[in-house]
Amino acid sequence: MEDSEVGPGQLVLVATPLGNLGDISRRALELLERADVVYCEDTRRSSTLFSAHQIPVTGRLRALHEHNEASLCAQIIAQVASGQTVVLISDAGTPGISDPGARVVRAVAEASLVVTTAPGPAAVIAALTISGLSTERFAMEGFLPRKSGERATLYEQWQHESRTIVFYESPQRVVATLAEMSELFGNRRMALAREITKLHEEVVRGTVREVAAIVATRDVLGEIVVVLEGASEERVLSDDEVRDALRDQVRSGATTRDAVAFVAESLGLPHRSVYQMALELRAHDNA
Image (cartoon, rainbow, N blue to C red; front, side, top):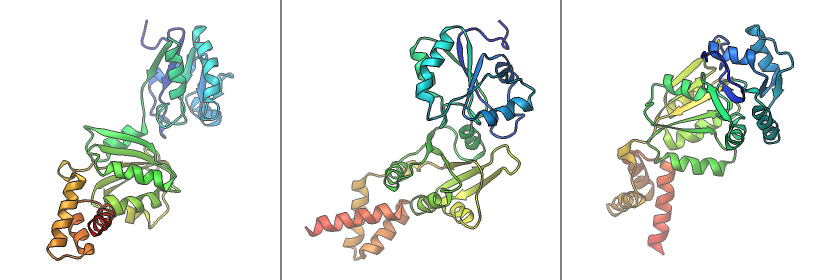
């Protein structure tokens, strides 16, 4: 079988362009043309892609999104089992990465049917590779939680995460998110990638504090990916070590405020977490 040919009875995840419609492989185009049915997030957006490459739709586009994905699993399993080539695409990038698709893949795979891919663009990889930060090991966080308590828990984990961290954020929340991060990770390096491959593509690099200050002064529009430097290995300290450092400062005559400032700066730790630890330590020692 030639690479361009499609075997019967398959679910094929096809990566589509992030923005530039030319960023699609020849094999992906052939799959879109030959598929029996194509599931997509938004039929209007996908129709634009089909039209740009002169691919007839002929009623093959079906909507699959977060609200109906679960209910469509049985239908897609039946289609693949009957020998059809079923293609799954998202609005942009690779299906299943912070987009619908993972549930369908799991269901079809658990039915012992063929799941394969025509790989291509993925915003997380595109942003990571142009960030200027380490690409050896990274953690993908998807979209950050909306609730402040859940974000605080995630930030606490990041204090000890040595891998590069990649996440998506909306233009409506990115300024507030970076302001929060500036207090905790102000000196870490980061990159904010916006509108990757599109006309107004932009990458803002610097420390978290520097980038937060830049985006706070203007409107930030479009699709956004944030890449954050991981914690330096030498900065990953136990809580007991931080408490000991605080005690040493207090015993030498420093106020709680000065002790916190010294320990946070010298150990490269977030001021807020060191301050909270100092309050707990003071309450324990005074009990």
